[in-house]
Length: 112
Image (cartoon, rainbow, N blue to C red; front, side, top):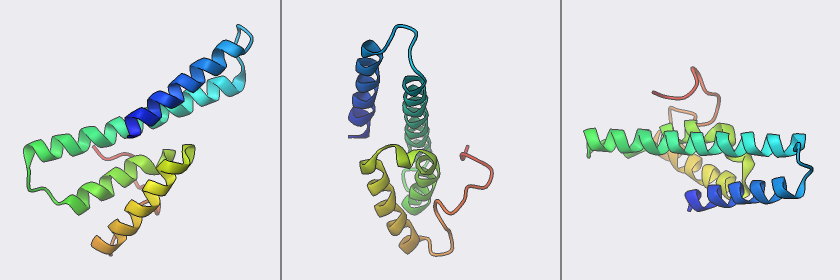
């Protein structure tokens, strides 16, 4: 579903780009950067989950959720559905990892 959203955002950016003057506008450039940031963040989260589960199929799902929240937190404001998903996942993570605060401030940037 998120991949479809990203494709939709990219299509909207392209549609708006075609309607703007040829040299482009600052808001088109900003939207493109935002879409690219969201895509990079979501791909990073998916890659981390895939690598972890390939190495250890029994990996702690709560830890994976916490990591995904760290990737999504910087871009969650770009889409209301993504923000809602983040909020629900954060509530779930707080229940399963009470000692951690997903989205409560990232120390050190994205996980490796």
